[in-house]
Image 1 (cartoon, rainbow, N blue to C red):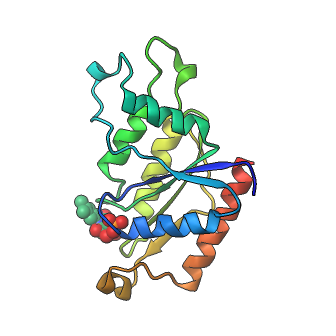
Image 2 (image 1 turned 90 degrees about the vertical axis):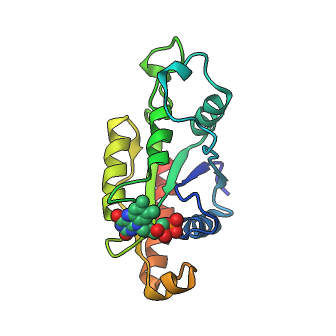
Length: 184
Ligand SMILES: Cc1cc2nc3c(=O)[nH]c(=O)nc-3n(C[C@H](O)[C@H](O)[C@H](O)COP(=O)(O)O)c2cc1C
């Protein structure tokens, strides 16, 4: 196993959402090749500049986790052709300097990222394009190649179970290989 650490930011808040299931597949594919953990960010308050200084414990913890990881992998649904609002809130907190410090302290700056998502017919293309654009805007180092977008099958929608085609499986494996290279 490499000494690399991949942090997963999962954008579905519901139990057993398709993107939670997709995150579990990513974890399984990374197992033995990198350390993997989940970024717990759901206790972040909505961005409010009154809350920036002193730094809240929840904000400091999330920033530390991102700072200490080699790569940040977003696995998220598409909401109205974009990413969910709580993902924007997370990125907003990561995009701000630490209290009393300069732009060098911005945690998301230079963080290596990749994005995957499962959704309807467009395979989360709108979410991936807008999340990549946001991440680039805040200075992340975005791996744009080898993203995985999954158009859920009728069987998946009917059963609530994420069922991947062989192309989806190949795409996810290629993304894992590419991201491990990208963070090396
Ligand atoms: C507010 C909202 C907006 C949505 N917008 C889209 C959309 O633009 N494209 C799409 O394919 N699915 C859209 N969906 C449907 C989601 O793809 C679907 O609910 C999916 O199950 C969410 O992912 P999850 O199972 O991981 O929670 C939307 C769902 C919600 C709740």
